[in-house]
Length: 265
Image: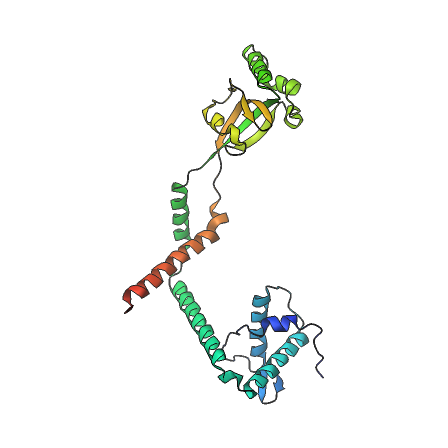
């Protein structure tokens, strides 16, 4: 005897998901429900559709899936017995599902017949790179103090030959960077808004001769290095490029269909 399922939530969430229909390559009968035979192919199709619908990689054991198939079938048969398959709302829904499935199959067929190869993806990658403004990163150190007067005093000390690293250790109130001679590491131009313009005008090895104010206080900044941010590698964006090119293909495909259609508004 078939045991009732402990939970019907999985069953209910897949009751209305359409199952793919294939020629029965495996006609092995698993169970007969009244006059309907559920085959191994039905089981395989259902297991695949169920996993896709529930987004789960864990497949329940075979007896549970067979119970679900039986439950689906007895409900289906009861609906037919009630004449619900002739209900206008049901017929509209079936037409909608059928249309969507046909459209999906047609688009899939087009993409299969017009595959995008590695060379096309590489060309798209290079095109995107050519039009990309690659930002810089800046290796900086700073000395942070509370007042503008203190910052100006530090600039005087620097002009007199004192070492930036030593002044950072002695006078910066940013203890995190002071312990590293003022080093902040590599930052983008937008990392600290107030640093943005300053970083683009400083020469490597030079410091700001005018204090820079931020919400944290007053800064004296030294630029130690500059480099371009390396672009994302081809391998890391290959799937995104494929989606982009396939979307272009779909736009062209649909555009051509509309162009050749006899439209009347």
